[in-house]
Image 1 (tube, one colour):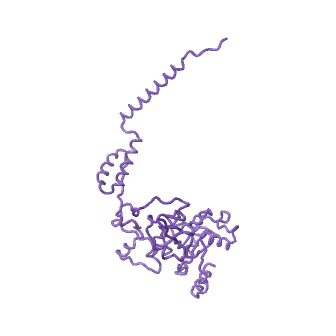
Image 2 (tube, rainbow, N blue to C red):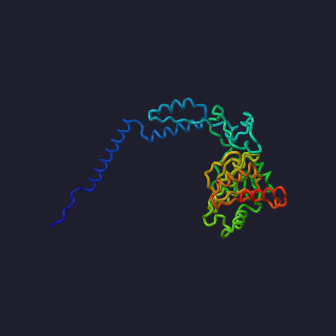
Length: 336
C-alpha cells in the first residue's frame, strides 16, 4: 500500500486564501457604507464635539448644542460646561466667604460655623469649570511630590514666610519645597512619627504596628506633612483643616498628592461613618474640646474604632501654663 500524495500546488492554495480575504473585506466595506457611520467613527465624532466646546468656551456653545442634538437618535444628548473667569481660579463654591457676607448669614463664630459648608441657592450657583491658575504645570508625580511642587500651581508664598521658623515650606526658584517640618515637629515628621510609635510601645518604633494601625485622622493638618510621611508606613491619613487665614494650606496638601479636605469640627458631624479610623491626631491645635459638654471629643470617639488612639500633642510650654493644664485635666476626666 502506498501513501497518498497531495495534488494541490501550495501556490494555488495561497492565491485562493487571498481571493477569499479580499471578498470578505469588500463585503464589510459595502455594509458600513450602507448602514452609516461605524461605532468607532461615532465615538471619535462625539469626543471631538466635547473637546471643541471645552477649549473654545462660550463662543460656540449654541452651535455645539445644536450639533449635539443631531445625535439624539440614540437617546444621548451630550452637554459641555464653559470655563469660569480667571478671577474664580480659587473659588470654593460652598466655602465662599463673600457669599456669607452678602447673604448676611447669622453664624456663631465661637462654634466655627463660619468655617462650615454653606452652599449658595441654585440661582447663585456657578455653572462653569474652575480654571487653573495662570502658568499651571503638570503636577509632579508621587513620591517626589511629597517633597516639592510647582510654585505656579499654588501661587502663594506667604505661608513660607509666616511659618519660616517652623520649617513648613521653603520657596526655591520655581518650586516650593517641603522639608518635612511642622508646628510641633521641628526635627521632621518622620522623627515625630517614630517618637509617637515609641510612646505607644509599638515594635521597632513603627506606627503601623504590624498592620494593626492603617487609618489616621489628622485634625488641623497644616500642609499635611504628617499624613504625607505616614504613607511610606502603609498608613493612609485623612488630613483636615479649615478655610481660615491659611486658606491655601489644603491646596498644598492636595498638590502634594496627600488626601485632605477643607472642614472643621463645628456643629455638624464629620463626613465619615463610625469606627473609620484607628488613630486621631491633633498637634498643637487650639480646638476647644470642652465646649458643649465635650461634644467634639464625643465626635472623635464616634469615628475611632474600639481600642483606637487619640494623640493630642503640645509643646513643653503648655505644661507650664495653668489654663492649658486645667484644659488637659478636664479633657482627661471627660474621656475616663
